[in-house]
Image (cartoon, rainbow, N blue to C red):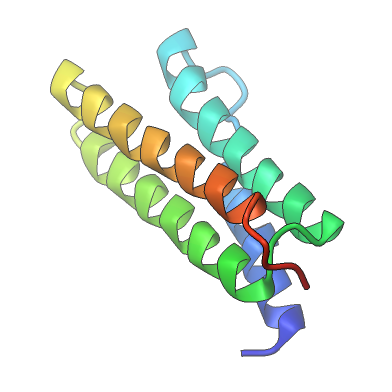
Length: 107
C-alpha cells in the first residue's frame, strides 16, 4: 500500500471517529476519545514519530473500536458492560499509540 493511501486511510479513520454534534454527554465521551486518539495518530505521523506501517496498524485499531461501538449501539443504547469493554479497548489503543510514538523507529 502506498504512503498516500495510508494517509488517506488515517484521515478517513479520523473522519469516521469524529464527534457527533448533539450527542449525549456519554456518547460524546466515547466518540470524543476516539477522535482525540485518531488526531494523535495523525499528529505523530506528521511529526515523524510514527512510521507509515505503525500509523496504518493504529488506524485499523481505531476502526475496529468504531465498528464495535456501532455494533453495540445498534439496539439504541450502550450498556455499562459495553461501555467498559470500549473503555478497555481505548485504553489499550492509547498505550499502543504512546509506545509506537516513543520507540526508536522514525520515518
